[in-house]
Image (cartoon, rainbow, N blue to C red; front, side, top):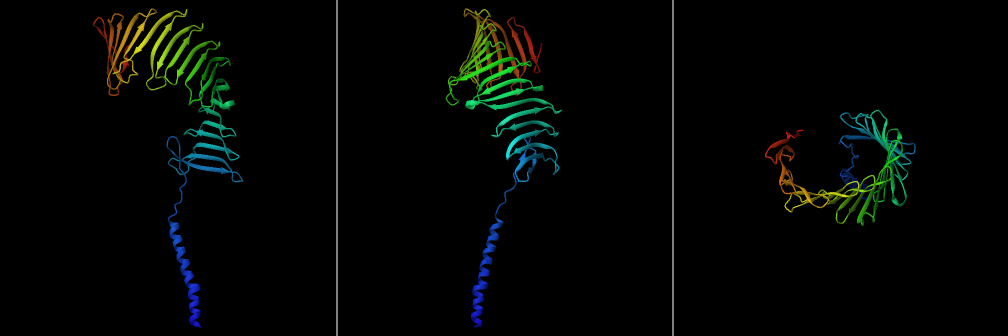
Length: 349
């Protein structure tokens, strides 16, 4: 009987205890390998570590988040950024200088979009303020105000962020200039854009047409009388290799004045650099020719100017430093004399 009792105690009491004790030990071993995620570290734009403090209301809802500059002391009272929240959504962001002065602040609407940004001077006065509003069809407007709350400009963009209209105002509130742009489709399918600039009298003074296919840009400038002043054609516009291909000038009475053309050669440094520019008169007669030479990295070595008969007016020879910046320019004239135009990186008057 005693043996049965001992056996019963061993089977139903001791062994389960040993068994479960072993499982607990394994669980404990596993718990050692669980990695605790470290709190996220924030940094300022200059790379200074930031300490973050949060303020919540009685319901535990976030109402304020402050980012302090954490320099050499563990507790720094210099604010880098302050975020204000309303009903759990960010309503305003304030940015401060290293001296702790308010630099600029942005307010947000109920949808979380920027509604207003104000920049401040060191003395706390408003330097300028931009107010953002949304229009129909995805358009948005930005009104910029200067000191004293004077409206300086009003810019309207489409749903793709492209400018539709930009109006500049004088201090008395009158329109100083206006630019209007139009596109033949959405950004992904747009083939051409046109922009028109008007003066304070609403007279067209500039027209720009750009082809997204050919990368060519045409700019027509007008006299205040409305007659054409000049016409320019650009190749590879809005790229790193953009150049003026042709310029045509007119007198104010509308007559043809002069035309300038740039010619390129295949072996030139990055064919975007002009190796030759010719000027013509109203009849198309050659007036002068400008020829340039470059080194393998595109630094100017020589500039030569010739008359219509090919006679040299002058030739400028360049001496460049290791960065390719001109430090000396010597002009060789047609009569055989020379003149120093630049010395030690400074032009000689």
